[in-house]
Structure formats: C-alpha cells, structure tokens
Length: 116
Ligand code: AMP
Ligand code: ZN
Image 1 (tube, protein in one colour):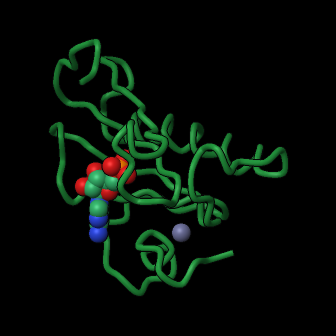
Image 2 (cartoon, rainbow, N blue to C red; image 1 turned 120 degrees about the vertical axis):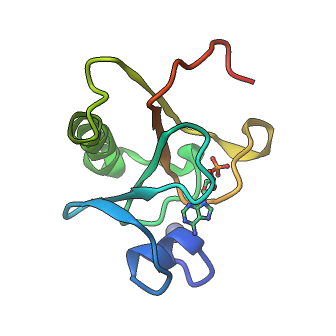
C-alpha cells in the first residue's frame, strides 16, 4: 500500500510534516510547499498509485473521492463560486515530480489558459 521511498506516502504516514487541511478514509489534502497561486493545495489518495497510468478499475472510488475532496475544499476555502483549477500531471513531459498521484487545486487569482 505505501512505498518506502515515496514522499507523499511519508506525509500520509505522518513521517514528514505537512499543512494538512482535509482528511478522510481514502484521501488527504495539504498546502503545496511551493504555491503557484494564493491557494494551492494537493489532494492525494492514501493509497500509493505512482501515476495516472497506474490507476486500475479497483481504484475508481479512491480516485473519485479526490474530486469530492476538491469540491469540499474549494467550498471551505471560499473559492467554489469564483472558480478554481484542478490539474494532475502525468510523467515527465507534463512535469510530474512526485510519483504518487496528486490533484493540484489552484485558486485565489485569475488563471490563464492554455497552461504552460
Ligand atoms: P508535480 O510536479 O505535479 O509532481 O507536483 C508536485 C508538487 O509537490 C509540487 O507542486 C511541489 O511544490 C509539491 N511538494 C513537494 N514536496 C512537498 C512537501 N513536502 N509538502 C508539500 N508540497 C510539496
Ligand atoms: Zn506514495
């Protein structure tokens, strides 16, 4: 379930501190250490899944819960109505640096499109 050398598994296990803002049975969320917007949170499954390519049908509920968490966090952070962006990077070309899937939730400013 958890990977020995995975940074986000260590945050899930409480071995590395994080500014945790949301916890459920399947999911945790914490503030990004290098925020790209006034509000930048990472929403991750407790289960170690390295990339989007590694998601299996058995993970459907776990992955769906990321969206429910995003909805609740956007609401509690006060950006549900003005709007926000969810991003998941997959592998190097997209800029994935931590190989435990995570949803970026960005908000608190106008976000341009297309992204870089
Ligand atoms: P990605 O580039 O999509 O893999 O995103 C990884 C994100 O994790 C980056 O936005 C980093 O700033 C963030 N990050 C790395 N280490 C930590 C940490 N210890 N606590 C919170 N966020 C982190
Ligand atoms: Zn992990």
